Image (cartoon, rainbow, N blue to C red; front, side, top):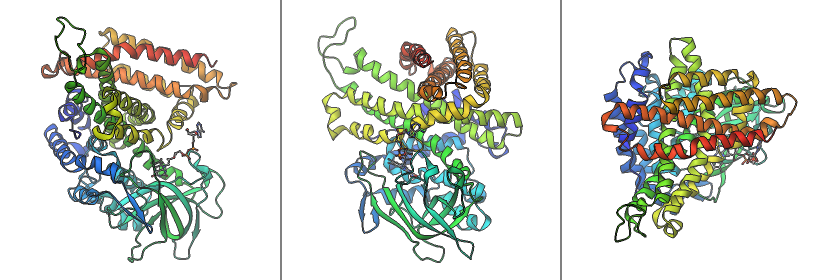
Length: 567
Ligand SMILES: Cc1cc2nc3c(=O)[nH]c(=O)nc-3n(C[C@H](O)[C@H](O)[C@H](O)COP(=O)(O)OP(=O)(O)OC[C@H]3O[C@@H](n4cnc5c(N)ncnc54)[C@H](O)[C@@H]3O)c2cc1C
């Protein structure tokens, strides 16, 4: 069974829970983006994903990418699908019209990547970095680079890479050694090796634009000495640049995406932005990429849930404990142990979708809202929620898809049903774009503690303003927010003398915030479902909402207890 885009759920979240068109009305660029237009775009995207991309999921895994003599061939069908994708304008959805884009809100791109990742994670890796590369070049590139590359990247005619990692420099990019030597004509020559570069070489597009972190000759050591460069596979005069793919990795999953070892051998490149401000420029791309990885987590979990849910409705084993008892075996979907697995994943998927789509809305508000204080609040939302989405929802994608595999029993462990592919593919989302441990440190050590928790408290306050305080579940959530605030103040003061303390608790801290956010998102869902009769709580949303109540508070309290043991 191929993935089916859950269009009703997506429309409900966009329109009834988040009321996206109303939220975006304050922005000049989106005054004409009404609910009908959004429904139409999402519907067409769903068709493309289901008809063109989803059918390539299995072949992407079984045939995979092949390397020979420095060239990479992607699995059969991948190139034609990619050509159809960019020619239909999908990569350009949220790019500016002046750059060849469609000028639609970022949230529609988020919906597109949620569906694409679910349908075919390997294929989706290729266009997944395009929007980040577009934003990076748009904000930091000079006029000459923009005139040659911006439209090609916006439209997706040329694909882009993010070349950060080196064999000895992974989480610690300050160790990057790739060298950039200035040339008389204003260009640079890049020399060095990068590893694990997604889409470093392939046959999907005529050119590949590499964005490369490297070091100028007089640069200081560490992260502050890094500059960002653009090195295309094919130079503007048509010559092939000295960028070589020496091998692709033989890896656990994601076989449809070539993970390349790249060698820059005096390759021609141009500086993007200021010298030694490369990480600053790259962060534009990395932040966009982190939201995308959070969306991958949500999409992959949806794909795993769809398979497990369909299987559970068909597979009959033993009689379920109900009144009256059946006389023959019931579908396993009726056994509480299986329902518990399935509804737990739904709770994570639906709540994650609310948070991820809302983050995409906040990205647009942070850029263009006329009111400065609203822009700041939006920036604060993105800054706190992005690492949480990236880490918590990718961990759940792996754990939850493994739980979905469990629903198949032994049939899940064999390849036939495709569920084991999702477990393998999803594992890497916990590692790339900054490992989940690095996300937790980013959240706690870089964002929460420096101001003693004040920014976090403001953010929690904005969340609480959207709660219905007549509802006892909202009051319980507020109590937990207060517990977290008190704990954060204590942590900030103890961290001054216990230098290791924040690093020991960072993962549980992120988890605790993820649980608060998930609870908050479900309160929004339930409120909307009660208001809209077609979505009332006796239907689609009841069981995940009930499942969530069993574990969300106990798990939050467990995180708090574990953290306190470190004092
Ligand atoms: C399939 C795939 C695709 C990839 N695509 C790209 C790409 O397109 N471009 C690119 O540049 N890179 C890419 N990467 C590389 C990826 O971003 C790195 O693997 C990742 O950043 C981790 O670096 P590392 O593997 O060197 O692990 P290390 O940094 O060596 O980390 C090893 C372990 O130590 C932990 N650790 C390290 N430092 C700390 C710390 N300070 N505090 C706490 N824990 C720490 C990590 O969390 C991890 O658990 C890809 C990797 C894979 C597997």
